Length: 428
Ligand SMILES: Cc1ncc(COP(=O)(O)O)c(C=O)c1O
Image (cartoon, rainbow, N blue to C red; front, side):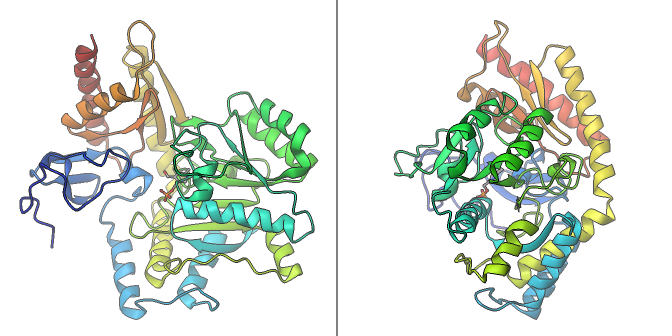
């Protein structure tokens, strides 16, 4: 049964403390979601909007995917809860094998379950530091991230996130992290390694940065892989946003000449049904942990439950059923045609991103960048025209579900045009 949108006033602060907005934020009923089906979200005032963000990258197979819902329901009846603390369970074993098979057994051999992208990033930082400490190289504890990156808001991932997210307010300890540019083809990374190479445990990168949809250049990736050969650090690819077909390949790092040592996946993993994440661990790290008989001291009570792992298996089956790579490549081509047209018509200043994950950069007529508040105004104007898009730094981001139909692309096109036009009139 759906929550009754009209039962509670939404005009003042109420019990729900919504994340990432001021504590006194209030919402009107056209902003309070009550349900979602296919590619649409329904709001408390009875309106619906087309979601062009796949529910924050989370729901590429559409809201209410029946295969995932049935799998979760069955697992909840079969084994409502089984833990992975000190003992395995069959549901998790099956999902782990399916994930390794999907991601390539030549690249990865073990799976660690987690509950969120942020927690998985914490876990990957711990794994890298332990990997070196157990080999007697405890001074190798620096974790390097990219400026402008986002890895979550747990203490480790908050430290690693490259944007200013009030880290000093929360006393987030950033002494063991470093940040480098991602726009210089790896030059600053190389300089850092020249200075501190023997102290670097891992380098963590998003193949396409979620903030602004900036894809790492081929030159950056090539240099990163070459520097690993030289300095030995682990490469962790945070594919929380890019995993499962988003960029046109099953994983964005499939296109790299060599595999990362750890692959982090979360969004899309259960098509949004569960709080879930995984670390796929490559042979180098996995085999050293086995050889040394080392225990990785990281556990999350809610990680890898039967319902969660059943959802993962159902998602993998669904991705294969829709032939995800050709589906997303086709949608990506249609999206990019639209974006090119908007650019040629001067509606947007540029296009970033890859596959079905695009950033549209926004500038005023005088060439100045839109501020954060102005971007939110654009996002809200597009929402008023019936489509939800994601705000980025001086940009809006499009992250549609894989079954976006031609008429939905048309709807997106029309809402983007009208929304940009209405916002421009306010800025003028
Ligand atoms: C690349 C990346 N890493 C990590 C995270 C954090 O994930 P979560 O919100 O599940 O903690 C996000 C969330 O947007 C992300 O995009």
